[in-house]
Image (cartoon, rainbow, N blue to C red; front, top):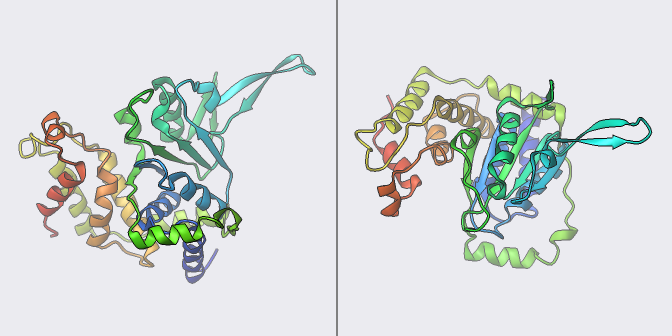
Length: 316
């Protein structure tokens, strides 16, 4: 077992390795680490050219894990993602070829470009962490994490992700533009970014060990009540009938708890505080709350609705 202080040192080293290439995006780095150490998936959204893919690729290089990148396109088939039968002339029979989903880290780039049959094929892997081929079920290697990017500005040949698939993502992180000083730093480093070497920090065994430690972070009963109060506030349809169309699922409660525990661990605490819940509420809920047509027409953002919900909940 690795010691607690050594774990924290390694986490700080991972952040430093990522910051070699990613000048800004501290929230993205936080959420990627939370996804890694909680063992669930993350959806990253905003305009192109904001280093979404570069951030994930850089993180993967700090880990001794299998990493695959899949470029989602409108003509993608489930067999391109999961498996295929390849004829073996020596055996005069077909062999099963396992495709990119059989990795630890899977980057699903521009996931909303894939049609619904590909999304449904991905759903079993995300939800059950397994793939069914004919009459056999193959467990995916742990840890298994899908890190998906989504481009919200394209109109042609894109498909909305089903709510059932969205609910499988622990977090939805929205990328922001850099500040002016950060932009200058990006320009200063742009000529050398391909020459920067990223060091491997954590082994697979260490990642799984950290994941197990996160499970044992202490959560007080009042914190659990605070989480349930937030979730039940989103289900107050009468109060938010002009803003929210559907209730969020119990998976939202579990996701908020797990992400808050991981955040507490990243902040070198063995217990969750209310500020952890507040910090993680927006990335946990923003893809689970479905706004009404009226709210969308009035250009009300889901982040605004979440802030409104949080302001109505008192910590007991």
